[in-house]
Length: 204
Length: 201
Image 1 (tube, each protein chain N blue to C red):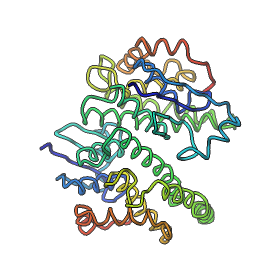
Image 2 (image 1 turned 180 degrees about the horizontal axis):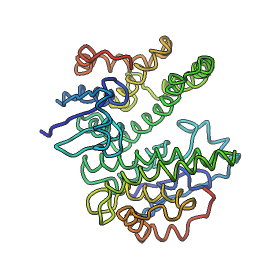
Image 3 (image 1 turned 60 degrees about the vertical axis):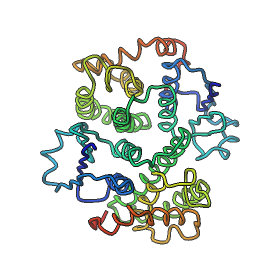
Image 4 (image 1 turned 90 degrees about the vertical axis):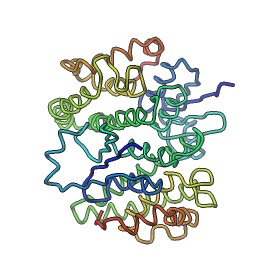
């Protein structure tokens, strides 16, 4: 019998969106439970969770927290993790590397001082991103895959993270043809394409 | 058997978990340690400008946790079922969060800020973490199932760093102490702990 998945998070993309995209790409049904910030439901649930954090994935009698653990679990369960131990290691490497970019994005998002925010954005666009994307361009194939010749969660994770950069800088992938192909492959994958049309529009 | 070559600085740092896992699995590997002066030359040849890197039959992998997970699998230390493996991942990720907080304490240059951060860490974050993880550990001294997994080894490694700053941190945490004992008494690890280069971090 197919497992029942329940994903619990705030009503934002944030740290749950990668998992939502994986379910969508794999065409696997799940309950997409969302709490508003400051909700009573979360306050009540929090002490009953493994580490007092979201997102959470409930699968049959297993409760998981930690967003990348959840995403990796779903990737493995849906055949999107990579087809061999070395492929899985490569995918893990790609996904883990994205955390460096996400940290910078989070710092920008959380910065209240407009001047400091502008400085961080300039540093991101002028120095961090060209280097980062340069590295990732070499890791992606001309066909638009990070691992082998088919889509894995590494491609989807890259697409997801880039979704936080493109509002600031729509032309960010200019000159990075392999990465542009990765993004194109992911967003045109039927399950993902449908999700992108249907998903709630949220600020982050 | 594939050839494994690990490259990092001559410290424990982000490579030590990997070294511990190779040791537990009895898997031979080349433990390359470079001087800081050699790094600028190597950096552009790495996938993301960082080390550690692991070369497996010529293919280069980076990101310490990705490498560690691969070696854990090769050494049979990942966890048996997919939910066991996810439990191990989850506990490791939670530990890494606290590891980042510890790093912030240790790397703080300003003496008074450092003292403040150290106090906050030892009074709030650390006891919270240890109490939580005492709850995750079972009576036999394992985090996942009834046998050693990389979750236990990672915790041991983290405590190795942590007790340098907070020597009595684990007092009273019986199950966590059992985990440490189980890890230390694993033959491969015991041998490595005796033989490994002594470095300050």
